[in-house]
Figure 1 (cartoon, rainbow, N blue to C red):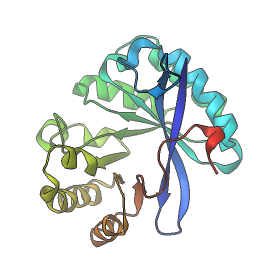
Figure 2 (figure 1 turned 180 degrees about the vertical axis):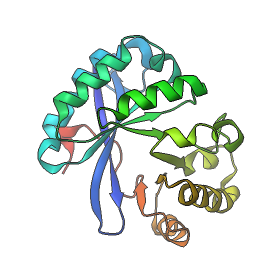
Figure 3 (figure 1 turned 135 degrees about the vertical axis):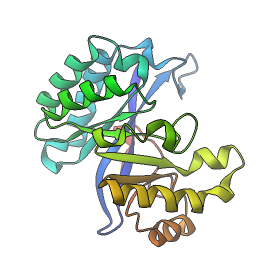
Figure 4 (figure 1 turned 30 degrees about the horizontal axis):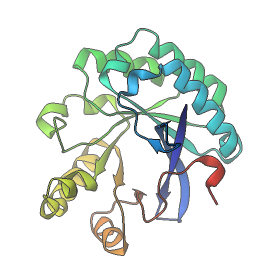
Length: 220
């Protein structure tokens, strides 16, 4: 069985939950919810159905909160993905939908995908900038086609590079300002992280400080 867990995204300017990232989990034989071995084990069409149920439970059509849905490159290249996402947006209306690309596609793929989903009012975010293969040199040509970027502090912490976080935040905050992009800071865990974000003018946050990923029925 698959379900979506959700994690709130906070606008620190008014302490408002402006949206949720939905995170796919699979129930194992011990009734534990774990990361799937492969996110492609369940089709995007079936994930869209789960997301619609999640949106209904969260009442996003009333609250107008945004749901952010992850896609990797393999899913992006599936010929059925685009239609499933467009249909999902129509069924979620008037709630907002963002697609978070967890891997950078080719420039031609980005151009086509961006042009198509923007026609339907779907936002496009490039996830995990600055880590792995998503270095600035590798993604700078893609930035004109997205609405925002997401920087995950936990990625640098997990590799023992937490000392690089302040300089990285300064760089990506400046990039977001220059390119007129939304910047979401992921991995906010404490007041120190909040203060660091404030130094660089980053007001959109996500992390354990605001809530761990949870099933919708367990949310307060």
